[in-house]
Image (cartoon, rainbow, N blue to C red; front, side):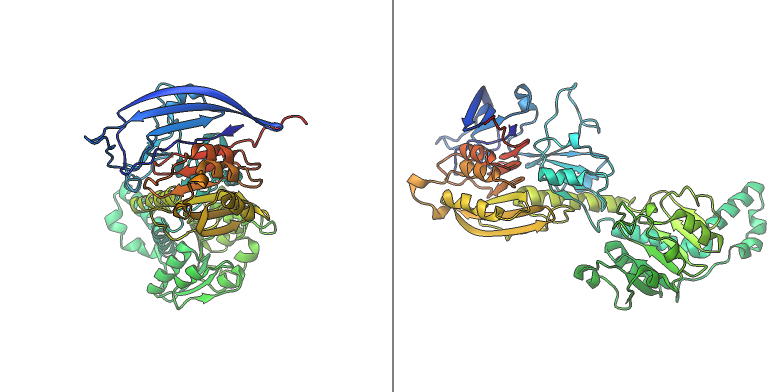
Length: 551
């Protein structure tokens, strides 16, 4: 079964924005190629735009198609108007996303709305407009919530445990996060926890509340202060486990408080190393980092599985805790599952302290434990920053094919192209020979490659290719972009080719429709995308691969 969204373009010198009237027609076509057969639904929209006295279409926004044709299998054609919105990308949100962040989506190019079931208007049960991208925070995203047109998913936060990342990779969909967006908020809570573990502040608050109920607060305020003695952090040793955005920021501010900092991070990158204070001492293991430390801050990601299995579940266990000082303070604002609760209780019984914003069923009422609600990123500033970063990440990918901060796709950025360059991006399985198959498609179409970039990560590879149509001047061999994309899309191993083309109408005499059909029919392709002028148009996805007949 194949789902595709081609379009027929009429190149214009100016741009259109107003859809004044439209007439529609539908038809069904079945095509056969050898033992393969395919059925398409065609949906045509002929749009009339306002024009000036000379008959030139007047436009003041992005390039919009004059004639748009969609073909699809697997959609309800009668409802196609509910999710087709030529001229704009559609972004669906889950959870409450910061309005300041959502403002990064320009309204002339994007429609942003809550997803159905998350406050979105379902129009009396009628299918709402399908999304090109999804934006969420804590919502547990289900595979059936990822509609066919979705080509990018971003989470406002660092973790992506609530997103089916493996399934998205299989579908050729990049998943993005916002590393560092909440780093300052979490860092400040870590410093707060450091002080809470030093001065018995919570115990003092509870004591004064009790005295107040008895009317004894003024009488005992000076006498009872000796019950809550503490220590200063200046001159003490802080061990930071994990030196990413949050860990590095914590280390820097701790040095400003006069603390000696030692850290550990087996995957320390050059970028992270540059954020570290000069005074930090790097250890070669967690155990050595926490040795002689007065405070230990955990700032590592949670990965399912034990340490032996390559995970981080219970990584702060008896062997690590045994190296800490008896009165050390353990700060956990990363994930509760990182700490072995039973082993933790043993060291708390001996005088250590634990401060965290995660629940713990074993030490929740221990006198040496201070457990807070999960407040790490709960500041207006952090939510604004995370939403803004997620929005910019989605825009970079949809508009330019650029990939940053993805958890399943390689970081990829090709320098900006000039207005007559056509950008095509291809997602494929990371197997030998795919790049040559893709470039051979371009060669057979007579297209000149201006620049290209190929990156891979795990089982997926990502290609960004800029084409120069001005090098193809022979009218008898005029560029047929739709034929090219269909052929590339059906190459065995290709998951999701996409095309981001310059946002100006190019004088291309042939239509994109036939090319995209042919590309989508290529063996092994999952999806294709051609974005030419009008945001949101030109994406197709091969859902199940070609249907094969009997030999």
